[in-house]
Length: 584
Image 1 (tube, helix red, strand yellow):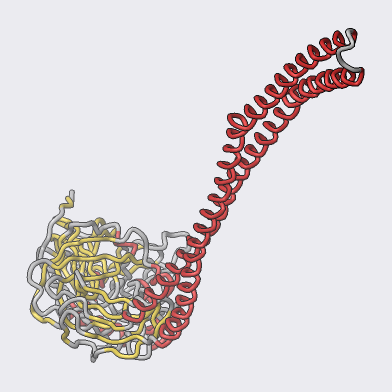
Image 2 (cartoon, helix red, strand yellow):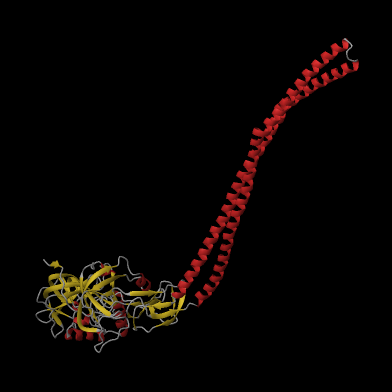
């Protein structure tokens, strides 16, 4: 029984753009003869995910537009220019900000004048309130003094005078009564005249009336005059007290109004000042300054739902927070790759990987998977709704000498290996009728068509689970005169080879779009319009031919020659679609 174990074999495999699920042989490669056949061998297959990506700085200093809305780039240093922290990289158009700033200065001055008036209104109101309250409080004090003065002064004096008048009148009445009685006796004795008697009697009568008047005056004062005067004075005090309270309440209300108006003016002034300060800051941000030492790398501007991007430059219009340039940290690098959905489940954080850079030949870098996106890339969905790729970040470990942002790189992520796998060249297998078939070379040299069950694969070999024995020989191409595989069965499984692989068609087997067609592993890196090399093979270091022997390449080229241009074009498109290749 075959066993699967995880291992990592640092091997350099050059692949093109797009996804490629590969199986790298840890043991000997399949033996291919010059006669176009290969021996069935047993060895170890390593499962890897192989992908092309782009180098980026792990910790770049990003310069974004901080101007609200949109702004046009008026100046920008050439890409690649070395700068120091604080150097001016470029400048954004600030003419619109200058206009807004001028208008804002006018509004700020108006707000300042309104604030000054509101402050003066508060001071004026304070003085008015003090004036009104002083007058009202004085009225209350005078009214209280009047009550006290009447109660303790005038009323007792008037009462005493009336009582004194009554006392005097009573005494006079007594003397008048004595005088009248004496005069009457004297008249009886004829000592005085009648006239004198009448005069004394008149005086007696007047004294009685005087007592009566004094008595009634005292009663009038005590019953009516004094209480009424005291009540009038008390009411006046109460009215003055109420007036004082009213003045205080009105003063509080009016003061609250002017203070509220002052608060509103202060807020308006602060708002206008903040707006002015913000515009001044915006004007200052029109200058694009380097946040750190390094070289200038232009940001990319997306072109919309049709995909693609363009570098920043003079005349470009940028939005707020849109990246203009970045100053990369060349001491730490990452590789950004897009992993096809068929392989993303195999990628995990912490897995080891090797990195080769197209511009740095002969050197292999080590890396570690740092992050795998949880959702598919939205950009790739716009470009191709049927394509689902996941953005994956690999951290380059150790030495990064020679690496620069934007360089194209190839990564190979170690996943697992199959130990003691029976294997044959991938191009010997053809998928037709929902089944996998190979041409087996008999002892007499005759070719026999045989159905096989395949397992995992790499870009050159495929695991055979059933149908072949070690040491047998299989043809890499359909031998002349060999029987054709059975016709396609519409009820059969649509794919028997592992996900992401396309079988090699026999020479002259028909259109490349049939179920038995397709020249290379998915994601081989050749675009639909990829050029051909001298052998009519798809060019590019990522082609499956990169692991083939000369004999295998010749056999593949021979089959290509037997295909029509339409078939080759259709085959190329199939390779690009399976590889998840991005198209502009």
